Structure formats: C-alpha cells, structure tokens
Length: 258
Ligand code: 13P
Image 1: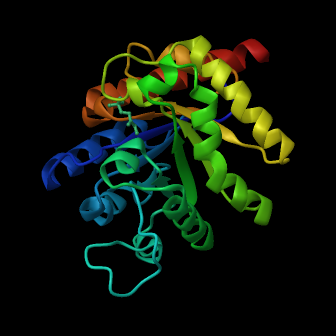
Image 2: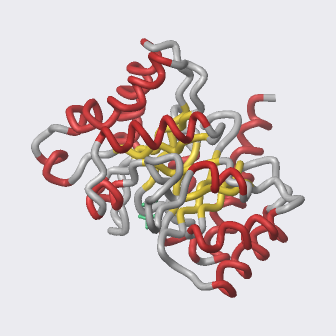
C-alpha cells in the first residue's frame, strides 16, 4: 500500500437525482474530510453538476466516466473534455472495458481521449485488463501490452501527462470474483516495469468486484495505489465501510512505520 490510497466510485449508468444526491451527502458527512483515502466519485454525466455542488468544501473529487474523442462541434449526444472541466471534473475514466466492448472503442479513439484529457488538465483513469479467454490462454500480458499502447505513445511525447492505470480484469467485473493478490501483484510488477523504463512514476489501482469484505487484502498490496469500485459503490453503507477500512488500515500501517 502506498502513502496515498485512492477509492474511485464508478456508478456507471445507475441512480436517479435523489439517490445520487443522498449517496454523495452521506459520503461527505462520514468521509468527506478524511485524509485517507483519496475519494473520487464518478456519477453519470447528467448528475455531475449536482454531485459537484454537494462536494464543494469537502476533500472528495469529481470524476467522469468518459469523454468525447472530439473537442467540440457537430457530435450529437457527446460530452467534451472542456465541458467536463467547466463543471469541476478533475478525473476521467478512459477505456473502460464496458466502453471498449459496447461502444467499439479502439486504441485510436482512446489515444484521442487521453490527449484531450491531458490538454484539459484532467487526470485520466486509464482502464486495462484481460478477458477470460486471454487469461485462460495465458495472454494477459499480451492484452495489456496492446491496451497500453496509447498511453505509452502519449508519455513518450509528453511525460507531464497525468495518468493512473486501472487494472480491471474483465472476468472480475460485476462477477463477485475478484482477482487474487498474486494476480494483482504479478500484473502490477509487469506494468511498473514498463513505466519505469519510461521514467514515469505510474500509479496503479485495481477494479473488479471490490467490496467491504475484500478491501483489506487490496490495501495490503504494496504496489497498489487504490481501487475502483462499481457495484459496491452504489450503497452508501458499503462505500463508507470501504473508505473507513482503508483509513483504519492506512493509519495502522503508518503507526507501525513510526
Ligand atoms: P464491480 O465493482 O461492479 O465489479 O465493477 C468494477 C468496475 O467496473 C469499476 O470500474
């Protein structure tokens, strides 16, 4: 576990005005002023501003789940990076496997999105991870190599890019079957080596069936900088529990060091 641990809540296409407002209010009341973990809430686009208003004076940050690969213009239904920044977004999820699959997002599209996020000064939460077939064939690193190409291209061009890698094995998302500590450590080691060679201090977070029962095993992984939570982040109690457990474990670790 690193000095600063992140908990990113990806609410995906869930909630309504009241639910989203209540969820963020409850979180702020109980966790809004914790130094640990660093919390990022990623509501659906339409609720970004509403959540931003509730977060105002707290330490919690606002994230978006995606952005357009175009800057502006005749792109009906799209939301630009500039618009996100305009409503207070600091983080943006890019390349989530659900978008790669359901919206046919290729590396070319993802590269454009990463470039726009960089230009707008947002931190990209860049998702990668193998599917079940790739895992079974022993092709996890091959899949990761392919998915990392856009971000490597950008870093070579501009090392000041703000990017966090989210390792989210597709087979673990929404299945209740999270990756093992060994799986995460093995993949983190591989990813860190790639970024070390580029002199880029990469942060890696893990996503895939993280909940209040298994969070402690992820906090204990030294090479891991946080988690990205889907289903469990839709319950205020579960999300607060996750954050509280991270806080407690972090404090205990710091006390041990001192
Ligand atoms: P679950 O936590 O529901 O498995 O979702 C993970 C995820 O996709 C986060 O981006």
